[in-house]
Amino acid sequence: MGHSRQDKAASHDRIVRIAAGRFREAGVDGLSVAGLMQEAGLTHGGFYRHFGSRDDLVAEALDEALAQSRATVTAAREAGAGYDAIVAGYLSPGHRDAPGAGCAVAALASEAGRLQGRPREAFTRHIEASLDGFLRLLRETNPAATRADALLAVTAMAGALAIARGVSDPALSDEILQGVREKLAALAGPAPSPGV
Image 1 (cartoon, rainbow, N blue to C red):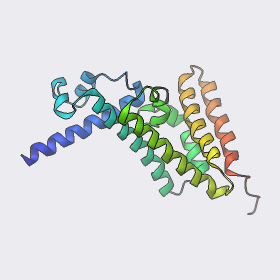
Image 2: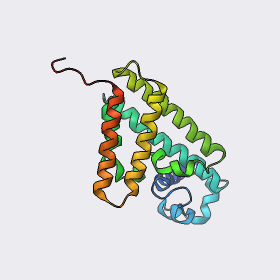
Image 3: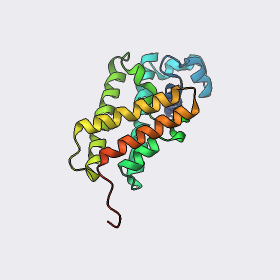
Image 4: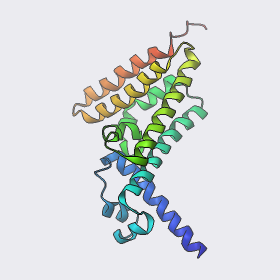
């Protein structure tokens, strides 16, 4: 019995992880439950052994996608990255080109307004945490940074990444990433003087 519960829990976690990636690639409405279950190596009929409804899956998968986004920033911070490095990593071609493993906010921002209940609350909590985190990051190099600066950084990053993914011209996409990266660098305060 314990083994069966462990298998079910492992299958459940696998479904949620896969769905979190698929949401970032295709959006909430672009997810096929049948395709998801097949990718997880399970039958379509088994879905309801794991979730009461598609909405339950959406809530859990969004929580997972947002948690993965937070974990990426946390790992960068633990490795010593500051504001500039985090912005540069976020607004990079590599991040742009890997939506399934990238930021859930940039991938799902256009859909967030249509979410209800738990998913929308999770999205809101994630944005609040991101604002707090970016304000702390900014204040490491610019003690005068404000919440408005953090708002600008968070929203410009997510918006720039989403637009860079959406345009068909690769040069324009790169220009969007680089231009926003350069403008956001100014929020961290003046560059240190040489020799300091």
